[in-house]
Image 1 (tube, one colour):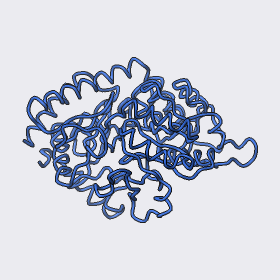
Image 2 (tube, helix red, strand yellow):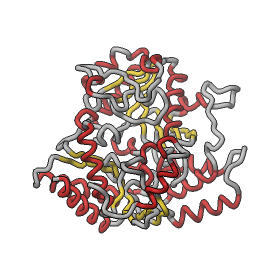
Image 3 (cartoon, one colour):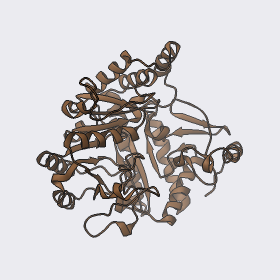
Image 4 (cartoon, one colour):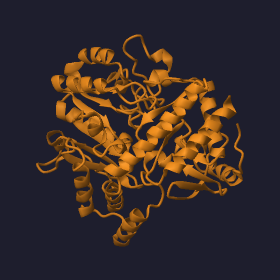
Length: 436
């Protein structure tokens, strides 16, 4: 359905944008037909566009705003830092403070190294794994998104012909990906431990690491089965490969992240989004001996990392403040609200015979239209016609004042209250009715 509210100013801005940016946007993820929405401002749980429409923001800049928009404590801390400077060619105490705050949350976070994005965190993790093990191959899970570096984006969105009867094919995401990249990435099925181990055992002595997102957004946002992660952990321990968790999005689910949630300890963890308090950030955390590949103490490090804005004091200050505000009580409250949203909608969908479901964990959720059950990338995969139905559903929510990501993905921030979730549940039911 079309939007039922004014988008004249957003449409006009898009016409201007097409003359200065490819396709009118720097972030392809924001594109929607007939044009992207253009934001004016945000406050707490709500976001306004340039046409004056107000939305309950359940996208939160792709899960990065754990406290919603313009939280007063974060604004105050960042404003004080801005008065002292935005960045320096010197280290800062703020970098130490955020490292210590992260280290206190998870036993595996023995050392921390900062970057500017989650993409960089994953890139550094793969470099570290190769340097530490002396091996070249990496394994990743079919349909999982880990940023835009060449090795990480292999088989992010494979078509059914690439799935294979046994081992998924390594296929490129971006046109022009070198064949050498594809040859050095082994692709695993998600939540199928028997097949995954058979593939891994065949390359075990050549494998640097296994990269896995335990709650992968693009692979359906279906949580990993505990036995699946345990099996990968046991394989890595006996083979000498490193287990790398991508927690860029899923760290929010528990005070100690996925490690606490599953009771499974990785060798390295990629972090981002909420740990920056709304500012650009990425981080790699892990074992002392592995992280030492970055150490410059004894001359040139095995792996050189840096970045003009890495560990800048603004992101460090905002991140430390955000983590202080996100303790066990707040996490438990949000997770309960997320459970309420998924349970109520899934029960209603079943009762009304609608072929759809809502997956996720804790404060993360994803709508699947045309799928009653999702447990991996393949069961979540839809064709172009079904993607159009999802777009119509997302538009129907927007017309009712609820903003989620165009793929049907959403999240809760601490600014969201129980009554907001109840309103989202009712709006979702109304949106489903418009499609049936």
